[in-house]
Amino acid sequence: MNRSFATLKYTREGWIFNVICGVYFLLLARWVREISISNIHEEDTYLPLFGITVLVISLLEIYALPVKLKFVHHAVREHDDSAGSGFYLWVFHTVISIILTFSIFQAFGFETTRGEDSELPGWMAGIMVLVVIKELVFLGFIFTSKTAETIPEKYRRPQKREWVADIILTIYACLAFTVTWETIASNVDMQRDNPVMFVINLILSSILFLMFYLPLRIPYHIEEMAQLKTRNDWLRWAASLLFVLVPAIWAAS
Image (cartoon, rainbow, N blue to C red; front, side, top):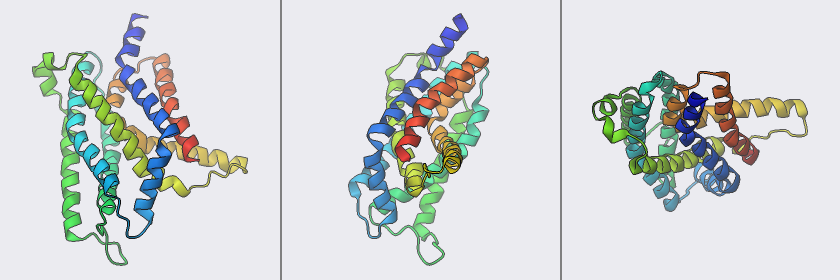
């Protein structure tokens, strides 16, 4: 019982993260989605406020993600460190970052592709290289915990630095998910009048949801995976995901 209580307390940030995102998907995401759809699908769009918002929160993530990962690495030292599970999520995190980068420049009216083959202009190719370098740095933080080990007192909880990182990462996840998966899936028909197709579309949508959502919560995922030892642990983890999956699918359909 003591271990279960500790685990629940230990993963509370992941629960809070999921609940906040779920509330956002139900109440606010549709307005962001409409702007994002206009930015992607309409020609000659100029949405500087949208572009600035996505740019600022993307830059803030560069600060927040490493900070949060250091706290996580310090915390999981007493458990089995499951940072390896973060690699697969990192791959999709890179894809999300690339999509966000395109959205930012499109919002400012830049032509991010040219020609019938949608080739990248030279300057955009250079930006993509920088994005990949940033993601490789993130990958290093996912697997490196030396700072948390050599200066452990800096990463003992609770600390306001971690709370600030949590806030930034939560806002980033909400915005990034809407600009990527929700925008891409905006024209998907769930076919509710056809029970068989509705179930199939529901399953596919849930899988795609996890592919785009889990990479936005890598630190929380690593911390949770390090502690999932029993069936009850896995059930609690699945239940926390339902708090965000159901609102996201409902809002998108």
